[in-house]
Image (tube, rainbow, N blue to C red):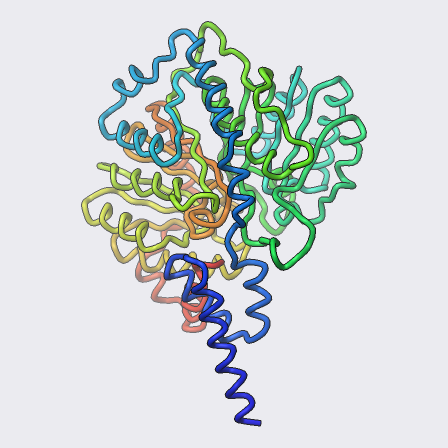
Length: 483
């Protein structure tokens, strides 16, 4: 019996190594999967089959194929027609530090600078959903919605019913949702919408099989585009908990943006690409003028921004690179809010270098978990970063879900990407990187108000934690690359 068990363990170890090393990946994720496969014989291989393999080549082409070039040509034509939009002149107007960030995204994400946008910041569910419902009700031609979570609860039904009414009026409606993030929401929930000619589809979902089933790659983006003129991007999803209606979380603190201007074109671009990669039998015509209407003669806004996406369809980790570049550019302050703090070595080094160079680095995370392993890993990294003089805050007034970064006086980021391995490498994410002093000041003022409802953590407070708690944190940290 002992010889049989030894043989099984040996075979399992060899198969684990072969399975993991046959696909290129970073070393941290490689070792994390080897730990799972070796110490969880059998079960580990099932987990890897669902959550460990890379996106198939067919799906990669769906995001990187001909639709992308067609959309970019359409956007370029619209920008050339718009008076007063000279990206070259706008780029020269920005500080040299900001220009380097713009150039980075132009090269690794093919994302031009979108100038003269009107941007409104929303930090409560009541404000966000009030504006969102108003925009949906005012739609005349098209509504495109993409969310990680679209729950079939009270708020979900309310939003869906608005979409049904707009479809009855002849508005073209498309809804894209993540099947895992929207657990419990099925095609039956959207049946009233499809009955009126609307469309709803789960992101990248295929029939269950062990060859193409990629549980690990989630659509974490939150995009709404109405009539090609009004866009929303940020951290909120569709569900009662985002209005603070769930006792488990209480008040829900998040950050979302409403955009009007050329930046909406780029939100529309990514929705169209995501939809056509998912709904293969009902693709959208990316050349349809309704999706990219002409900009008004006078653009009221003054905010310059870039819409940046990242995901497993690229190895460039574009949003992570943007975060690192923002940290590098900081001279006075770098203030971060994230529900999950699980940085890789490159982002840890950037944070430590900034803090030890005299930059005021602050990181705010929730005081409660929504995913226990992730929360314990967050606590571990917080306890390590505080040693370098980085200020760590636990937000106490409910659950903090905002994903924001404020750097100095004119640079900021708001979007869907958390400060963790999953958002950097595995999820499909979207962020707005903003170059505007007034928006930066508004986000900084909100951050300061949040500090009033937070408790600062110190080296001493972390040292007082029990050995059992510290063990759970260290154990969770070992699995950080695949959480």
